[in-house]
Image 1 (cartoon, rainbow, N blue to C red):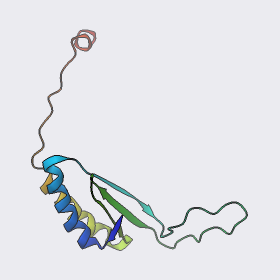
Image 2 (cartoon, rainbow, N blue to C red; image 1 turned 90 degrees about the vertical axis):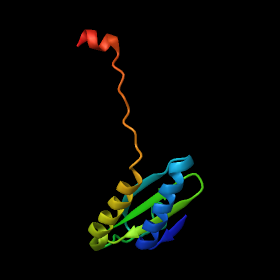
Image 3 (cartoon, rainbow, N blue to C red; image 1 turned 120 degrees about the vertical axis):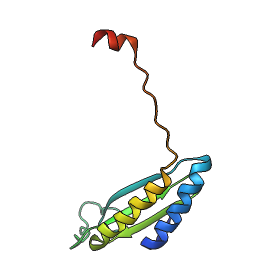
Image 4 (cartoon, one colour; image 1 turned 180 degrees about the horizontal axis):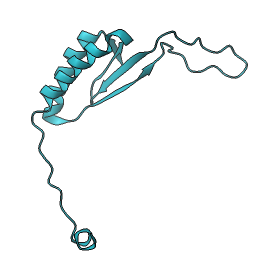
Length: 109
């Protein structure tokens, strides 16, 4: 997995969404990140230090590519604004799915 800067992540995510539009899909996950890259220590060992400030770890994945970035707490609002623009620009070709009503549900309701 490639750890990128925030700007590089957004530009590569734009390219990822364009390539995924043609032949596949992509997923994006966001989670809290404390800066520790190691697993929790076993019992009896000293615990990992608690960070003063948490960050966000953002990962994007398609079939052939994995991207990730760490966003500091003070930069989250600015990053999310740019991130939402990327997603809105890539979701212009979505089709509305028609819901098929089941006759048995309509008769009961």
